[in-house]
Length: 437
Ligand code: 9WN
Image 1 (cartoon, helix red, strand yellow):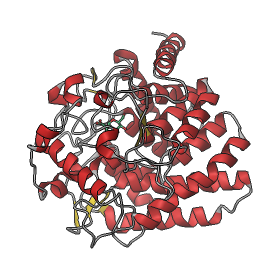
Image 2 (cartoon, protein in one colour):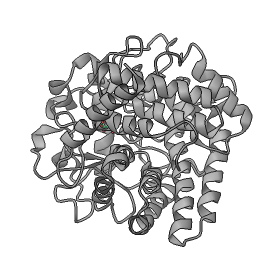
Image 3 (cartoon, protein in one colour):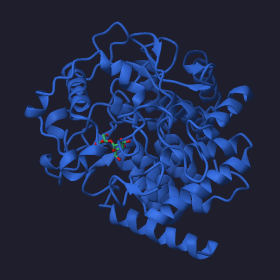
Image 4 (cartoon, protein in one colour):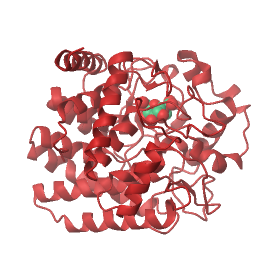
């Protein structure tokens, strides 16, 4: 297809997906599988909406931040009061978290990666809206404060996640070792019915043993009142994820830009970003594999798994040049095989690489979009262009799927998935001369 009609085809599809998933006030990730508002999805969605409906982008972000907790945490799901509790598990009756008074059906008590400051800055780049930035800035600052004050379990200034769902890369092999020491009591699933396997293919979703651990971990956190006690506290899962922390540092950089715009001081944000970057290099980088890995804070051990999250620090502009080179080498190596297809979520050479199971092999567009930004930031236009082309190619061929088969490029998971559509719109709008933001 000629370049023009090809872009038009993708753009039309993507716009239709975002419109179809707009339920008035916010956008859902996908109507059947994910019928509520998700935190990091909202950020990616806003980036795409900036191209076609900027007012909806701001509305989406504001509606998420209306549910921000008084301690600053932005919940990973804001439940829609018009959706039955039976339509998503674990729903409001499991979490029993009121959140802020504005979330009528409550929220979860865990978080997701803080992509929102970057999203707000990108939306503002596409359609300058200083008043919107002024409204959001203090809320974004509070979100960062929560992570710095309550999640520094390892004591080095990095944020720990307390549940795999907080990473957004839920079923990644990055958590396998930290999860393996926890009991997998599948009896818990008799009590709590899995809705996900009713609305998608069983072999694509987490196993029952993993799901039982997810539910047990969430119950522990809920039953301790969603309090964070740090490394010596009772929480059984505390992990420093390289993607989460890279996004945390990138949020501070975006806040520095926003601060300048709204008349606040950018310096503390830049200093925090630099400190997070340094701690990541010290704690999460493994020179032997040439990439970053998740750190189990309780066991003080790096996960051996090579996951795409370990390449995401490439988004940080001040990463040492030798590490940038190494991450690019890894992306091109047989482990990830960035070539005609975008990068998979996990090492292609690993014995347990699974091309269809959630975060254990398939290609996700949000991860690749971040890497595309990273390559551009570090002056690798050739790699950025190749990655951009392969993402658009797979979306054109298969549609706006949730994820893609890492060998055939076939669309898998749920169709009409919002962040795939949104990021396609951003890719189409971005020329290779440089990134916005
Ligand atoms: C649990 C909504 C979310 C994404 C996550 C993705 C998946 C949920 C689930 O869907 O997680 O949060 O039910 O599996 O892993 O990244 O935000 O799209």
